[in-house]
Image (cartoon, rainbow, N blue to C red):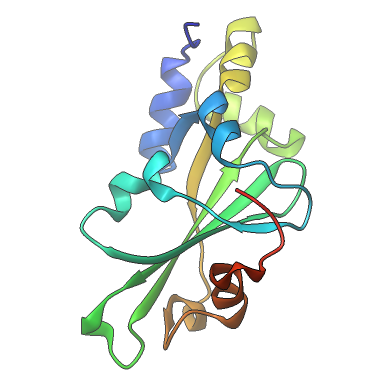
Length: 158
């Protein structure tokens, strides 16, 4: 199947927003979380892998925050940041654009709201770097809930 393209939106999202896109079918194969579920995620199967290349990844955790959004936390080890060697990077995966974001995004990207664009949105999920609170970015170790998940006591597959 050929995935639809929306070059203006892609350029806007990737350059202006620093976002990445991933075919929805690929995302659905690796992440099938229900509301509130948290699970380990194989980052190598996502566009985040390119961003994390060269880093020692300690854990990647996905959490479904709503019907439209999953948050992916990437915990990287950086010995230069001792005594807080764990760096947290957060990504928002938008499986659908919320109504309050859709129209402004169409306008900002100078694209048209047409069948091709809607099909394009159906073909992809969109990943964007999310803010991490200053006191969350550098950590002394993995948070307890992440350690619990990695030990096999988590609450959902991904």
